[in-house]
Image 1 (cartoon, rainbow over the protein chains, first blue to last red):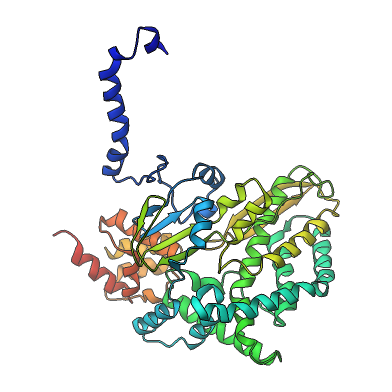
Image 2 (tube, helix red, strand yellow):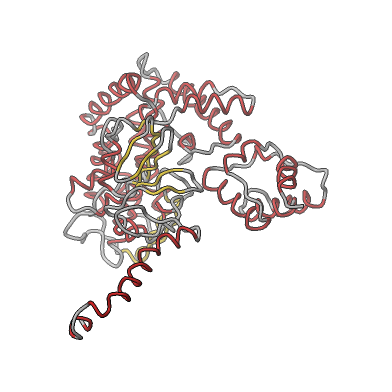
Length: 389
Length: 82
């Protein structure tokens, strides 16, 4: 304004050009200094750590700032990071991105360590999430059908789960909600759905999804899958269902547990200082605990001003969906496209029951404490302490 | 080099401090890195710690190639500036 009052911009033109040059060159200087910048669409400096982002306490603000941002490349992880929900949705439905070839990766690991991993190779071949093309359709369809029919039979677990919730919330003193409430609830649902009791620790089986699987993890995992197969074989399930149920246990339990835990943590945080039987007007929503998905580019292509080369890893982040305006948009956190989450309906069913049962508890929340487990794909707490007045 | 690697593993809680001290004191003793419960988070954490303390960069993907502590020590020694 001051410039205009003094009689026009011309007098200041050289200074303005210099200033503009300086600011336009800032991204270049920052890049030269080794900092990573967001490509076209703004200048959000990507000094964030993509590994710890899912549990970063400031993640809501980070995802809000990253709205409409273009993917950026993280040189240390050697992958593309996609934070914007619209971009995530588009890329999930883009058939130029495929699931990583886990069988080839396992074969390479077998060769590297001189071991055989038959159970792991078997179970990964049964997981729709890790499959592509015709094989993907072949393993996904029966699971979708099975889960859909199980939804109709939800009455078989609703009563037991309601009792578990009521009894956990009636206990005096501090509640360790993860171990005393959420884990038993999810185990009860899974035991009902799969007909096998799974006593594995959370995140034990989903180690297979970690990009870096150590020798120890692989050997432990191979043993766990062998135990799971034996349990399924002994459970008298129909022939041909073993693979589907094993893959449900491998991935489904941790997915459900992480989503229910993340949603519960949100609920008790919102309700801090108030009674559970006096909940906020808007019932706390179901949040997805699946923080990321990874894909591989099968062909070179351009997207959002970015040129992807063939064979590059692309990491898609889901937590940006939690900030969106409508319920439909927010459900995008459960994925879309051919690999969308098959357990979403089950999770919604369980969460609505939990919200209803929790709202019956006459307890005043005084304090909430929690810590996340280390993990890449899921946001899974190690504990959630709820102190009641 | 050896003590820095062991110190990093100990700080990360991957091995006990007493075990780290014993291994650091005996250059002949070896330790199976294959037994360390690394995942993609911890392996990067480890590589960053090594880079910070020694100035030698190591790629997380390379870590799987080192079965034992002495192999990693030898590889890092070979990369250190003379």
